[in-house]
Image (cartoon, rainbow, N blue to C red; front, side, top):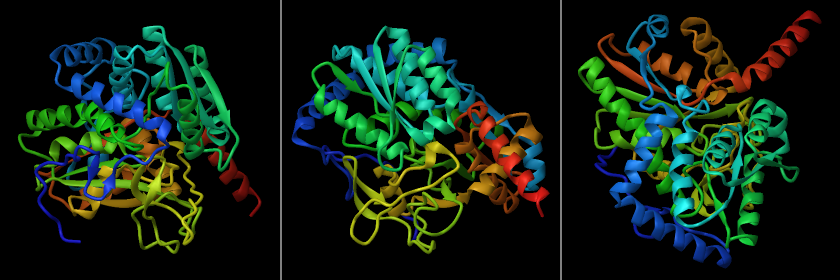
Length: 415
């Protein structure tokens, strides 16, 4: 599809970006979502709300996070200069704290004392448990059993912070199933409970709200690249699961049509259905995603011809999701953003390269964006710049990567 010029990317009053977004929920959730929409609209216009959030971002989160010129990665690519937006240096180790802080301030305004959340890679769960500890709120985090296994360190961190981690054994036992259980909890406990959703998906106003709280990433990056490089970058590159880190980086550049926005999905271990989580990649044998509704919003969804949600796979728990945020769907169909995928093997290679060349260990989610950024850089001038969002640090994934390496070594020893 040809690129089109979009100066803004805003939903209508019902939370639709074109045909995407909206609110598809049980009747019991309509009232709490309307209450949340009103509260967010009021807070969005209040200087005091943003002043408190800005103070917490600065003094608690450590913002602004640096924009680091990755000179050895740039030399390895042999083209454009690669800059890493260091969200891994934010408190708790990822961009998730940006959204968790904003939403917990809303919950406090609404008088909610019990906070529930879902988590895949565990970073949103840790961020939510952290802000609940800060404000003395009860915290319950739903997490699929497979992700509990993959992310044991983050499970320990959440429990250490006082959160109750609820293991979900239904379905594929990953992020989708954790969201289902969190929504069931919210339906049952709407009076005293706030659902702190972690990505730019779900029913309105969540996709808009999460984007607003994550856009601090792109605003900072825009100022920083102009200060360091004297001009805007040629491209932005970020991994995309639900899409919060990517939309946070992309949004402040939407009006800059010369800046390419490139999202990287999880290509997994193969092209067949159930082997990947690439919603936009129609070149796969499984055909990629089709427009549908999942967990309260309309977007591209991996599903079979009967509309049943397809299984997904990614080595990274945070990208292992069957749908994508509705604003990403809109930007993709409008031609303003591009979406590609990277395999498990490519993510592992990116993880290793960044660690060895820059002394920075990225999360496996962020690692998906590294090889695509290198390939893009190779085809650009050394005067150009690319910003890659390093959305989280890889401490949580070191054991998983070590286990993969041991498995590979074991396979090779038997040849």
